[in-house]
Image (tube, rainbow over all chains, first blue to last red):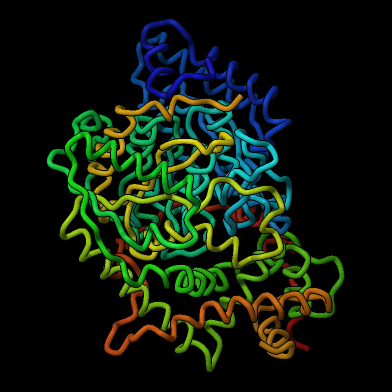
Length: 483
Length: 93
């Protein structure tokens, strides 16, 4: 049962071959068996999931209208607020935080009759590329348990890869959906900025954050995106644009198709096996009749530097709310209000979060704001201009999702800069507000998954999904499962 | 970055750091700042800063009364409350 895709699970229910309760029970059982080795979940809501599954079965029995994800289990990254359920952001500072409301995407899942299995592990406040920065546990890559699953949505990616859920939600500020999807051999999509409401997504970098789906196949990602996308009056940056029915057009190949291949994405630092797999994927498209052209993104080499100023500046402001006053941890002993706030934050935040708050505060501080924050915003515009120019001549841009396959747990833990560089190909998409998807495109000789990144201009998700599906249909990489 | 600068930034961020953390942070932030300094190579004369990927405008909504969280729900996560208020140490003498 746990091997099925979301579409197959919907079909099984329609045909009366499985009930939502049977499906949910199978996944919960698989979590019980598998998660003690993977540590993808921070919380599993067995009772709530079973109750919801029975509700779906009863609705079906009585002929009531059912939502698009009826009876489909799903896991949610623990940075998305869930009413009445602990939401920790992987941080000690929110160890006991129980939100009084649902994030918009969580409310949408409930409206669609999905079965919420539980909350998944992440780098604290979504800051990291390996999920090692969680205050609670280290998630293992299901393909090699000595390696990281990527991050920051590593729990969601690993849960899908290990068959513990057919679908999951993550968030992507600099690559946090696409990079773990690549490293875990699943599909992960970052929607265009503004496509999905951020209401109830606990903020990291507000001009970069987006919620995105993980799935076993491209269709699963389309189905989940269809459910969560659309305007929400509670997030003024969510756009007034209709949501195309992505699953209906997904089987139509895009013809003619012009693919831009940025020379800068195949430069120094790219692992040879990753390059080979990505080049074979490009060949697959060529064989399908696509035209490959070279494009240049000359400012992309500055994307990591610009990102670590913009994102941390926004984070330093967003995380000012953790002051021990309104919610979360408060230090036990202190001398006055300011000392209370400083001690609370010193005790509650982990190393990487402290580093980013410090860097962001520095970038915004008097005397440095022009040289750092504003300079980064100007470079951000040049990065976006590069993409605008490139997309004038091609439908999608393709390259590797991450420069290397999954690295070993602990390998980059003491070298923040080396860790930051694992997002080198994904970060520019967030700065420019593009949509992007990572799809499985091969394995290293040692059996580690490799991802192909496909990017499209803002709000071109329909095109992105159709193009991604073309590769999936012509290959079998997405069917491989870890032992 | 010097240790004193790092200490000043920590103060601005209201972040208490131990001596060991200050030492490590000074080393790591210096390396990161060296790395981000490559932005100075880029000619950005006449380039407008891009704070947001969308062309964002202020969005107004009708000024209507709608139900909101009860005081108890809003205070449920408060580390310390007094009646219907968040309790903090005295700010004014």
